[in-house]
Length: 430
Image 1 (tube, rainbow, N blue to C red):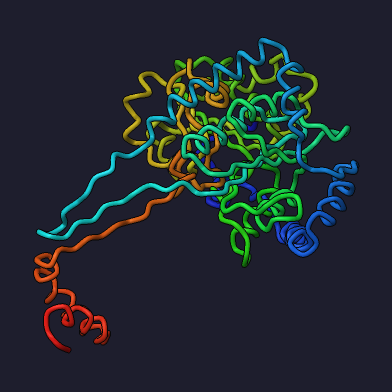
Image 2: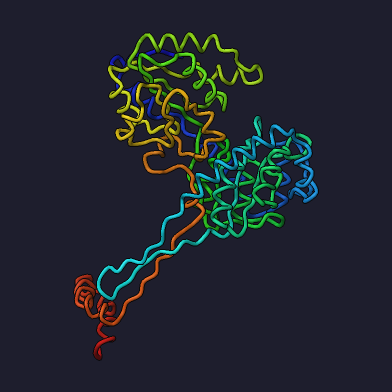
């Protein structure tokens, strides 16, 4: 990692740290727009064209058959099925507590308002499956969708070179009762769910992370006529660690490398008030026994990463709040004591025995989180993202009498005299 002192950074360099690379650019956006509009116009024909072009396979029937779904459980080891089952239990437990208590509010005597939850009827879940099939994402998206009781939930995930879906992904989907799984990935999968094709009916809202093409496609279909809404834009993953002089540099190194493992575009940062810790972490990173299969990815990310030495932990927290990281990890004494000062983060890991990798899989909290500073205005994915509220209002005659003058006065001040008349008509002739 590159070690720098915050007080020595120029304003331009400091701003560049906050402006991490976006998940798309104008050239990519134009390519994705063409893909989406082609799928919108040509349906399955376009899907087959792009699957052949980008994945080098030809698929006639995109939907995973019931037989493939049933065979999945027999194709994975018992240890993996147990891990999936255990993670599912924790995720369900946490998300089951996210339902608000309905309440009827009498805003004035005789005026009653309340909200009722309704599930979004049709939802689409995108599960990445390229270099690493994300089994955990099936659970993180599927559990809240199931708890919200969406009428129809579909999964789109890229097939492997043989045109198959990882059986663990199918097993997890089966556990959740999701039987509609399609072998399609990339921007074309997002477009298929947004607009619908001959084989993939359209959905109302699309969820899930993905590569820059997927992210750009989600943004496009959410603004295009006839498209679908989305959860939030999700770019390359991020981890910001704040550490004090008593932190364990080896554990910090493991956590940074684990996050870097997602991809070379991952953003990992260390903020510490100890120059010594910064050096020891950098040294520990060079000595980690990295998995050879993804070693180059990890090293590529770490080469672009920074350890920033601050004057204090408070200064590190101020930096973090401005950065608004997807994942924030506190390797400091008594991390709970600073929680009230944390304003912007997707999720926070408190203490050295709370590694981000545990949150990726099994704590129960959702790992679908806002990136690129969106944590300033977005929350982690929850059951409420798969629902919407309808408000209900009921006014008794005495209630309308009490607010009649308020309504007519405001309406006439806005020159909306028919609004005013609709109130007066209930009590006398207009």
